[in-house]
Image (tube, rainbow, N blue to C red):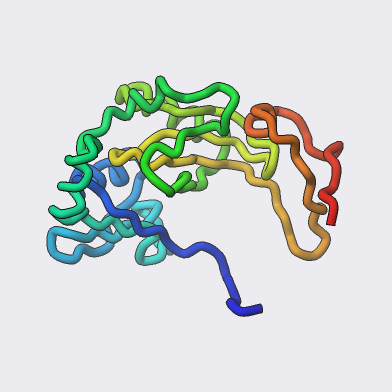
Length: 195
């Protein structure tokens, strides 16, 4: 073992407009600002009102003028998040990696009802939903995918199956089909991967 990994601690992303992103993560994702560095960096914790929250799980950093100029030259400074929603393919994964190499950032919610309420709240805001609610095969968790203001895909997830190192289930080999990404059945009949 090289690293005694204790789990994912935080994610840091660069954003086009820091204040718009802070507002999204505060008002939609129930996160609170822990600290700021000037007008370029914000640290956010989740949930906003938890007594035992860590200092931050998300670091938002304002893109520099140079980075914004590059986006402008490529025609990517302004985003139409609903355009990405229209371009989704039914046979692909349950969301679109809309903005570069980050595939998605996942946040845990208590249960399926919380995902349904989130979907309703997003629809009330006319905010695009990329996929869901649904259930993944691997992990057996409920999901909902939607973008943040920069197009970074956000996943809400609930009821992830437990996978303890000792006494846990053996890994399964899933078929590479769209049904694997959105299933509503149990996983006990899948083949174990070849070693």
